[in-house]
Length: 146
Length: 248
Image 1 (cartoon, rainbow over the protein chains, first blue to last red):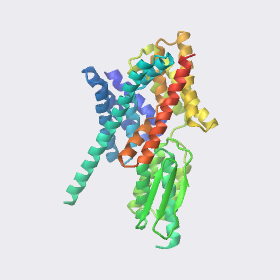
Image 2: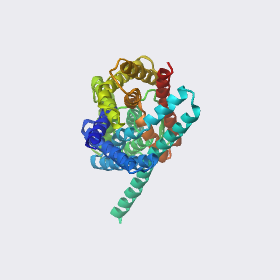
Image 3: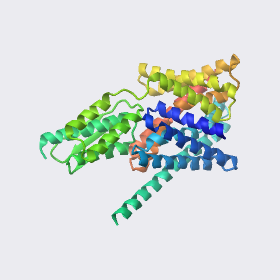
Image 4: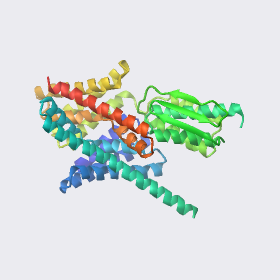
């Protein structure tokens, strides 16, 4: 587990460097990615569906990114880009591609559909946290005014 | 407000928007920033319409509407962050027009946060880490690093040479496939699949996916859909590169 945490942290921070994020936000971006990846592993370990696990993980990454972006007053996207990369179904897409090359189209479509569902789950996770963020911000503003 | 001032406000807003759009900010953030800047300088009514390939901005009825075309989009979130903080300072009244324009011009000309060799190094380390995350063997760590690094160098180099992004991505994933295949054949690597999956990860269009979703949520259907299409094409180019290697 610790190895997985370290690896996902380094990978997410490495992605931060590829995307040229400011130096002071590298650590937080890595942290968001690592927490999301651990959540994903945890859920898969407990026999949850991959799609559901991806959804929850991307939600968590996005929530942390929102929190960091409020604290450090930087665009939220700086933290979330690196965090969601590990969740992208690269393995499934690769397997699907391999089946296409071997002309086993039925198996390929099955895998591609699953990869598509997982991509959708990533998007849904981002959307849910976005909605939550907007509702919360409105609440807080209303509370401050009243 | 005087007409000369309006021109300057327009110039500042457009420059800020252009920098943000060129460096990978979400479309809705670009519009929001431009409107904020204009309002901070006393413009009461302004409209901006931003798509991934261009900006249309108009102030009041007095000034002419302007259109800025954006041809090339890279990813440099550092610049997005800088412009964001400049716009915050403008909103709080800290910067005058001249200062704001100067600061934005500096940002526009500033270099990337990390030199290229550090980016390549980061890409190759990330490839190795992804291999382990996807339950690969430690023996494949270095092969994945080599393949991922080579792929990323190819991406940068070909993209400078040929301005077609998808072709660069196709070639990069092709190089990754060939490298991984060679390493496995000569017994440097063990699991071909895992090495390829790990090294391809740095090419994945993560930024496009995130900002496409955020744009769609903010109601920017045009921008969201076109970014989604770009992400899909990128994924397809990567897949095609790998498929070309596998079918050899």
